[in-house]
Image (cartoon, rainbow, N blue to C red; front, side):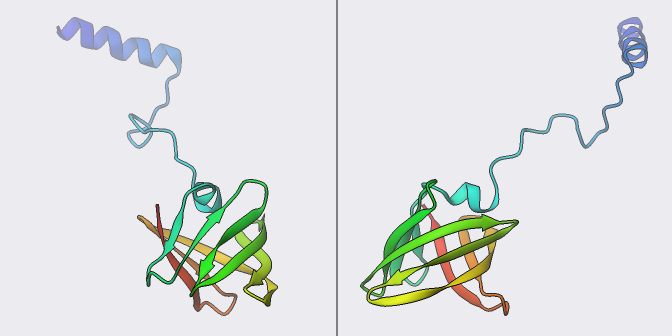
Length: 120
């Protein structure tokens, strides 16, 4: 048994293996940020609306009973969107996306929360 352990250690040394304890047994990273939200239903935490982002750069949903239609892009780590909420045009704005467990917050440029959703 000891001989097997010594041979295994020698084999690792000869192969140039430089695995670190942090790298051993880690799973591949899951999609994060905006990519992880595409195609997943989002429901406002306050129950007042929903949103579904599509890979084609569109989004649909509702907010406080009004239909929501978005065109969106990702610029760096920012979620940038324009669109309409009911009859009101939404100005182009880039927001920071903050994912915490099963919730996501879209933060305005001034750092205030625009909307918080549960990820479905």
